[in-house]
Length: 141
Image (cartoon, rainbow, N blue to C red; front, side, top):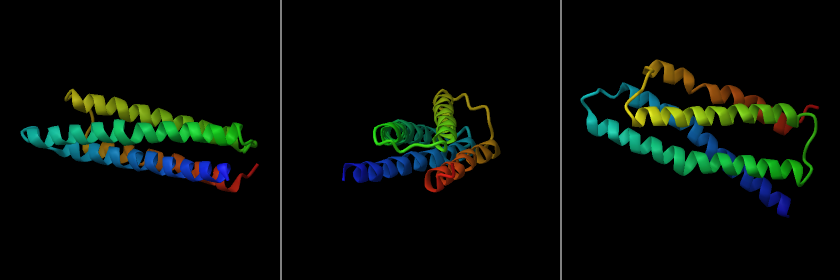
């Protein structure tokens, strides 16, 4: 029963993390489009980005990684498929930190990218999520 609960919590943590990974770059798009004279709007985006990154994404990501490692190594749910999955999760963690860097840049009004760049940046976690899900569900090797 404990394994079933842990798997359920792992999924909840992962969905929380990915909601942030998908939504934060969308906030970056809107923030980058915000005119310089709209100070109230820019400050609002800074608050939203900070709260999303530190209040939702970071705890969700941390709990996802920890619960995934517990599932893999304590409950022995691993195989050859786990190595590429862990490499992809490491890429997602890197993307998470990159988002944190961008939050800091926006907070200090040092944004260096346009809204189109953030639209493309928003697609990266999707490209990583698809093979992660396939590896986790199908366990091909």
